[in-house]
Length: 367
Image (cartoon, rainbow, N blue to C red):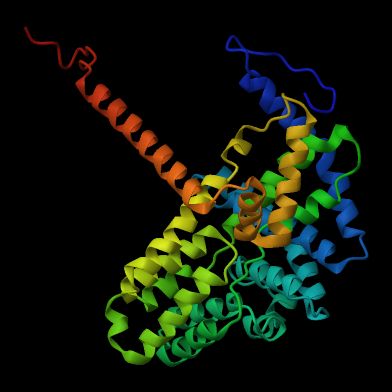
């Protein structure tokens, strides 16, 4: 494996599952503590905040989905108690910070505490986040979600107006794993630990609730009858398509644009670039495990740095530009590959449905 460790192969020539899982646990254990310690001791408040966010919010998310039972409840409670000092430290850090990312993490960490954590968290609010990041639609979308939960239509209209007026929609996806990887101890011995920790951080990032549903509901077909709302939703769609950083947001904006009745040629152009971006997405990275050397691991870690630096869409556009291949060709290749996968899945489904049912004592085969 990358880093010099040896693992056994299974009969199929791949790393045996139990060997891979044991190696992953060892790699994470050897890398997690020194990495988080380096982040907490950093002079960069964003690195400090990232360490507290990972240990606070990450513990909260890992307790969700736990099966019922006393042991489960105790385990979840223990995780929540372990997370609480990190939430409190992050909230205190945010109160003296002008960094919108630090404040966003503090708000999200406090938001995940149910009931809302006492003390420092009481002073963390989404309005201050919006003041620190005035050109970003993200905090205003959160304000819209809170207004919608309160059934406050006036506040909802105002928040969605601010979303529509924002210069960009930036969730800063990729920032958390990128900071973590930057603080991993040097040397190949920690490369795979960095990769596995990066995957954990991506999971924490992905689990952060973003109020997309509020926007899609607000800009649903029924709401577009009102001329003012229709104008707001047109600008929201433009924001998500042209000035967002992730493919998910671009797809949400495209769905809005279709409901708004944008010209077919414009929709076609948007979807063509979307398919080209999907074609550039590094699907093979899900197979990176270190058994094929450290270079693949380094490449994946560098990809996350690019996502943090340029955004998911910006990073994929750079990949397309570097390929030298036209968008039309990449989009056509993606659609062709997608059609092939769908046809293969259809054939497998047909074959499975045509196979004879297995014998069972309750339903013996007929003659």
